[in-house]
Length: 95
Image: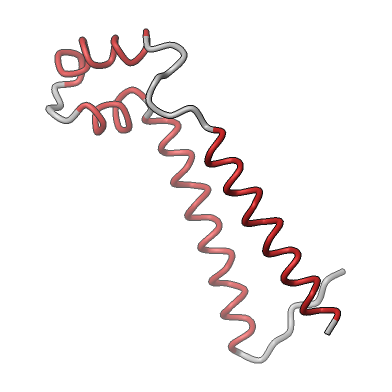
């Protein structure tokens, strides 16, 4: 019974926190848009891409995107190794 109350309390606090965070984010009016204006004005001529979002992700922020892809690949690889160990019946021992 006590576990159920704790679970409900945790759920309500988490939902309330997420709702508060979502409502406190200022939408629609960025604080500074100098960088946005630069990308919109010069993006196509510097990258040759018709889609400005694609040009930002793959041309202006290519190393950042590559880093994110490496982190995602490493995480998926690690989880698949753990599942494979578990599937074979071997228990992973923590030292």
